[in-house]
Length: 214
Image (cartoon, rainbow, N blue to C red; front, side, top):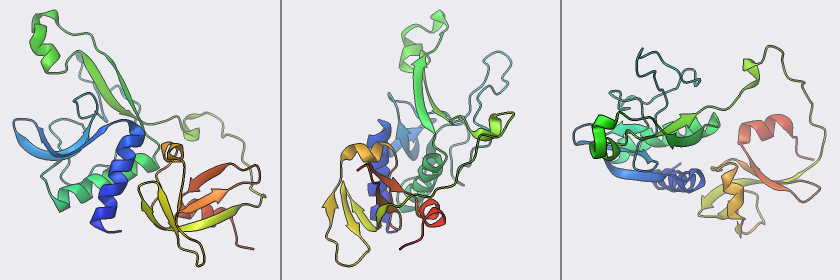
């Protein structure tokens, strides 16, 4: 994947997640960075009890790139340019693969902070939240084996909301923007149509493990 394609993927992901992609950001005391912003804040992936400083999130272990900003556990990569942007892409892909969502809400704030607390964002939070997974259950969820037929095209390129198939004989076509709210595809993934007309994108590994071409 080219760097330009990585930038396009991050832009689509940001729209899907309703966040701002910033490639000219600052964190800490004027340190240059790239990252994502929600209501002007870099979302936290770990958070803590204000009194005991014990970690209270349920995200488990979160992978971070080598230049992640570690003075605050938030989605920002130090530096600017190709290397920092590539690290941010890898990080956002990891969050996307793990199906993280972004949550916001109010926070109780020390009234002595006044307007300064509001300016510093102490009155609200933005957080990366890992979804419920089967392993958190005491009992394993029921397992199912796929035995249905579908129609699918392997994806060669994604440009905006236009898909270029890798299969010969098929022209590029536009898809509904809403499809990107479920998954943002990359080269090698699949565009899938089911018998009832439902359309979706499927990651290459999951599709190729579940289906064989007829």
